[in-house]
Amino acid sequence: MAKTEVALAILHQGDRFLLQLRDNIPGIVYPGYWGFFGGHLEPGETPEVALRREVLEEIRYNISSFTPFKSYEYDDIKRHFFSVPLAVSLDKLVLEEGWDMDLWTPEEVRRGEKYSVKAGEVRPLGTPHQQVLLEFIRS
Image (cartoon, rainbow, N blue to C red):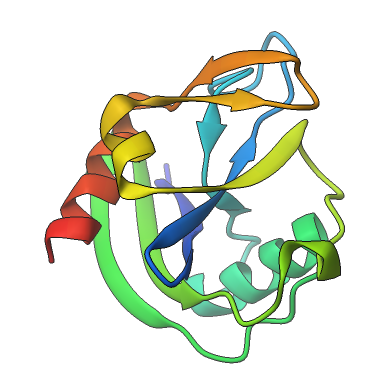
């Protein structure tokens, strides 16, 4: 059986990182947690093509440049991470998937939680998402 693969964007603007608050729906991966934009590769799709497609679908952002960061395999999923400069202000993005989105400071990433205006409460950052971001910050 083919391994599931996903392409994920480490969207950054200055020293801040744009993350998505995932919908709080039972049955999805990390419901109600902050995480990366991106998603599954379609059959025959490369991680680079999937990255562009997913980010465009999720926030209507047309990626102009990106750099591969790292790939990790765990939980029978191969995750391809890309460094993606965010060249527009948040008001130019349209959240099409997820509960909320916000820019995180490195300190908020280290703390592992952030208040969401739309959720009206503090929500956690997924542990693997936090680990990848901390590694990205260190690199």
